Amino acid sequence: MSGGELQTGKSAGRKSALRAAIALAVFIGILIAVYLARPNDFLLYIKAFHVIAVMSWMAGLLYMPRLFIYHSDAEPGSAQSETFKMMEQRLLRIIMNPAMMITWVLGLYLAWDVYDFRGGWLHAKIGLVVLLTIVHVVFSRAVRGFAADGPRRTPRYWRMMNELPTVLMIGIVILVIVKPF
Image 1 (cartoon, rainbow, N blue to C red):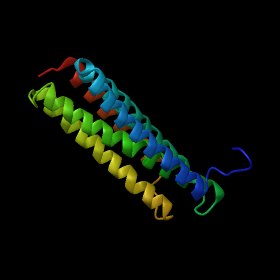
Image 2: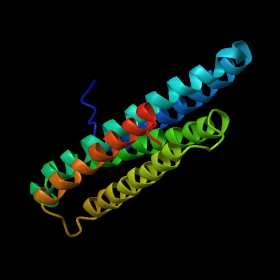
Image 3: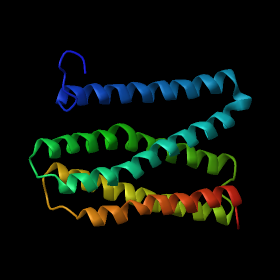
Image 4: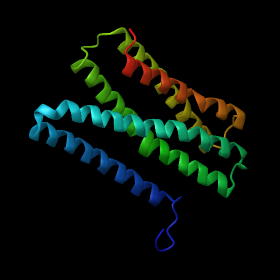
């Protein structure tokens, strides 16, 4: 924080959103440059960027319910509650949403180009990723609910919800690595 600038203001949020848009444009530019400069390695870069996007998405999915646990204990309208609102909104908009979209786009490209959408393990994996996306939607709705100071779930509920992304991730990783069927 330079010059007393608060990290919870609308100006800081716009700057963060602009940085996220620039990062996405840079990412697309890198993909195009890799495709043009190293077409034989393009698939390897797609896999690498897919893994990076998955890691970013999972980091958000694992961190968001922790924020909800603490936010549930904060008094609505308090400075602490307002800080949690900003943290949740930025995590969702700047990290989780772009990471989820990149994960889906690159993952579907890999499913089509590498596996021709064949294999029971691949269908099961996509099914688990759909469930992970539903968890993401539930978290997105919770962010909107907290932002409106609406009814809150208990910290116990969010502790249980914190386990869902982990369980789904374990299933997805096993399917990708082992390819059991």
